[in-house]
Length: 168
Length: 214
Image 1 (spheres, rainbow over the protein chains, first blue to last red):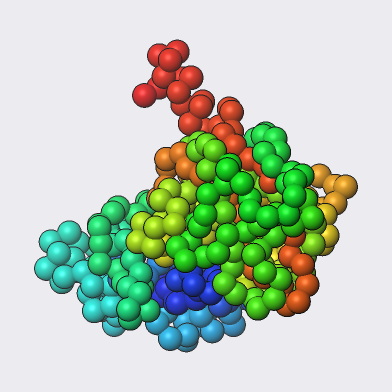
Image 2 (tube, each protein chain N blue to C red):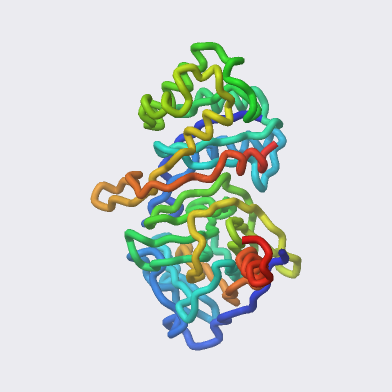
């Protein structure tokens, strides 16, 4: 299995109804072709920054994982299980994850360091994902600009264990 | 839990025209109302592809554990949606709830959506199901499980997909949305649904009355 941060993209389900979808759906067909359950090939929880934490199953091929990782906006955390330690990643990989959380998701570095310290190698994948799921902001539709804006109210997303249990 | 547990609310056996007093419109602000045509529910027009027409059962709200289902009597290569737990229908800023819908331009692709502040967010992956004339589709919301169901004509109900979402937990309306076809008739019949007895909320209430759990 694999874990990604995937962006939400604009896709109106029908004319006149503003909508968005987790961009992992762009790879649904490939993930199913690799052997995933068509009814629930992957699962996500929305986090801050118009992104989602996504788990894809262990049946997903290396080629599909590479394609997902290469897609614009996607960020893979190259660990498989929630209890895997970040100490097994290189410093560069840990910095990439940290920079993504701060620069893309939008969490202040001070908040991240207050919760997780300055050395992510002492933490697990679960710790990092739990941090990214501290909050999200609800969407609204700005009709004059035809944009979906995520500016609150703030709500607490579901726990990461929710999708961890769904996808194996 | 078996699907469905409720009965038909409207078989549209009446003269062509407005849906009538048991229905409210719109679900999505600005949409025209569905109508009755040949004892079925229909979009307001049969050409043009958009806007979709819609309507919700205004005679009652249901839930929070609730379901909605209908028979697709004419596919017309057009999309459609069923709603549940809808609150603030017609409000361009605060419409909320869940819906099952087929994709505009790709009617065999379906998705379960969560609606917040009139923004529809796909939950998880889309899934594929070809619907033929007299097949049925349905959605139910039981606790935080939102599921899509399908029944081939003459067959049994199957679950197409389910998602977990806690955004909307209150009772609400059920309803329908229909795309005008490309010169052919998009029709549904036997609109059904209601509160699910024995759902998660009902079980929780019973446990509380028995002094079990919290």
